[in-house]
Amino acid sequence: MNRWNVKSATGKIVFYLLLVMIVALYFFPFYWVVRTSFMNAEQAGEIPPKLFFTPTLDNYQKVFQEGSFFDCLWNSTIVVLLTLAANLVISMPASYIIARYRQTWMSFTILFFQMAPWIVLLLPWYIIFKQTGLYDTYIGLVLSNLTYMIPFTVWLMLGFFEDIPLEVEEAAWLDGCSRIGTFIRIVVPLVRGGIITICTLGFMLTWNIFLFPLVLAGYNTRTLPVMVFGFMADNQLDFGPLSAAAALITLPVLVFTLANQKYFRRGIAMGGGK
Amino acid sequence: MTKTRFSERLLDVLDRQIRWLFPMPAILVAGGLFVYPFIRLVWLSFCRWQLTTGASPEFAGLANFIQAFTQDTHFWRSVWLTLYFAFGSVIGQFLIGFALALLLNREFRGESVFRTFLLFPIIATPVSMSLVWSMLMNPMMGHLNYYLSLIGLGPSPWASDSATVMPSLIMVEIWHWSPMTMLILLAGLKSLPKDPFEAAVVDGASRLQIFYKITLPLMQPYIVLVFILRLVHSLKVFDKIYVIAGGGPNRASETLNLMVYHQAFQALNYGYASALGIVMLFMILIISITLFRYRQRSWSY
Image (cartoon, rainbow over all chains, first blue to last red; front, side, top):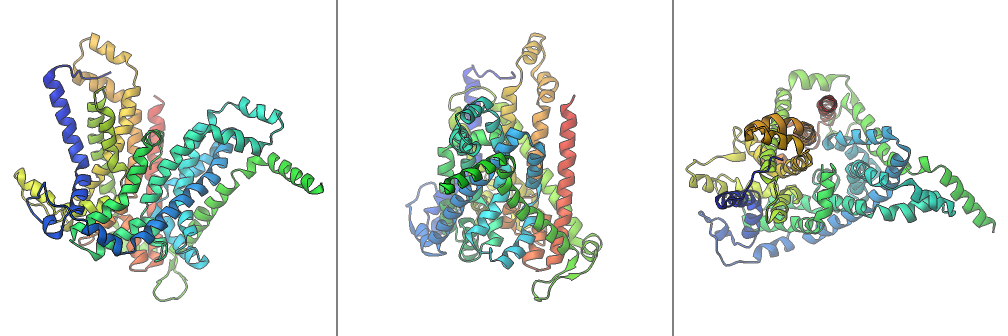
């Protein structure tokens, strides 16, 4: 392979310098937002920016007091958990059948759905959700999230189901286990790795989604990204509180996903993500 | 006694129909969320419907499409902006991602730490990172202009000027997704067979020759895959453009995505928005299908 040798000392130094510069470029916004979130208005506005300063917690206090942060945190959590659960119940059996009966037409139809731009789906949904009372409900938000979760779950789980030898299932059938029973007791435990991968990627996608709740969530079910957007309109140019809000909503998803990094990597390597 | 037998028989019947029973929930949800809404959308696109008036939709034939194609001066501009954003950011992501992948295609100390850092942009909530970038790019108080001045460049208006708003948005999109293209291309590089490279080294080929004659052709399937994945995604970007620029200034960043949103939920021209949505849907489908076909052809050589 075209691996450049970094054996010489200068080569090593140049290589690591490059790495540090790359990390600095990608990581800079994260450093900046955490730093600014602990600054008062005067410090945040200073140019040239200061490296050292006396930190304050006022900005976080402001976020907690204003804009119903905890209500939105609750909404986000509920919507994420419900979406992940509903997605597994709906997608796993479908994916299993496609894998076992090789119904490729089904998987291609599903993949086709994934190409549809979300804004286009939202137009009829908004009208239908208003008419059926799904507007501003958790169920409505979960349904909207399922539209991207189902295609990618079915697609990703196919590989896991195909890896299970049919003999394992046949043995269970011979012992008198029903097919549904075999699926729940034998097959599902065998694809545990796939399920964790789905839930790791699904947590990220569902926590981060903005466009669906922007249109489909009213005042009662607003999720965190929608809250932050509203907060942005209320606090223009007030960098401290804005940074605190931005840092707060992205912290849970970063911690959770990085804790499950192994599964996240596998998921995006298998063409998940987006 | 009969009850158990009944439930047993029911289970038996369900068991035999597992092939239809298991995909049923997914099919129902897909039907409810895609097929039926799509029919409503097509119907709405042929109607005049102002949400403000409270009147019901009124059939207007092709009026909405005619308006888009011939009267609305912004329509063609938004098509151009959509393509500009998509191709601009995908080409940028590809070049930077490929360069990074080539650089990292080796074993070195701290590899896992470095890769963890590169995952941050992909995972972080896009709305929050867009907010951070909009603060950084603020022409008055933002720090990017300060850093530009350090390397001797004048201040840029970034997203607040119609001439610089699109490049600014593309820059943020590249920052967000180039780690992803890097990961895919790096996986590709690591899976390439070693023999051709060893043979080339034995034959005394230069590094540049190896890259053009061996690496690039062997990587072609991965490169095509990256282009398809990222392009299909970039045509639909909403969060960033909406949060950072809101389609402005002077509609200079109003891509099709944002135009549909504005027409539907701000101007409340619901029928017209539906027609624009149909056009957008077909545009994305045609581009995606063309790319998929190209991919199949390029794989059969």
